[in-house]
Length: 267
Image (tube, rainbow, N blue to C red; front, side, top):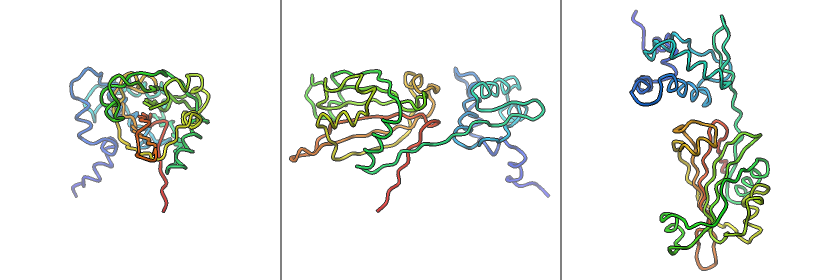
């Protein structure tokens, strides 16, 4: 009796992991070496849980045949995974996944969400890359409704947990020029410092998406340029009594291998 497509997939472990489209894309000509493209494909499958801890990896021969390139290319990709501590290779036993991701999510809704963000700030470390008043670019100036030449507080920070960077933060804040210092930001949550200066948020909007990591961000987050990052754009407003005004715009870029964002909403 002829085999079904499901049976064929069972016989071919690669077909259970990667679509024919993915396998075709990896062969397209560009400047990235084949072994590195295979390494990234396998790495993403490991860190997102497709290949969980303890799973036996496909053999070098299976990879070479499935992607139609040399066994040397497959070996180099697997060696890179082993060097990163994602897999363990043992002669006679094959290669097994050793990576185990333990998510540490952040909870939300407004008062609780702001409290959670401060808790996150207190239990992680901050590296401040930039802290100074600057004139914002045109699209930021327009969002805040500012006149040309106006300045705002510009911050760029990296947050680390146990010495490992997980988040890259870029923000523009109105009315905080020269009111917080680099040293303060390295020792206290940003929101706590703002509150001490009288800046209170009464309305927050958030938009979550994904972007490819720019080179300068990838370098800070220990990932590859072009790797997928979780992007969270947060706009915070203050109600002056007459109208609501935008006072803070923050974009947070997260390495998904080290950070997940979860909201638990109840009526």
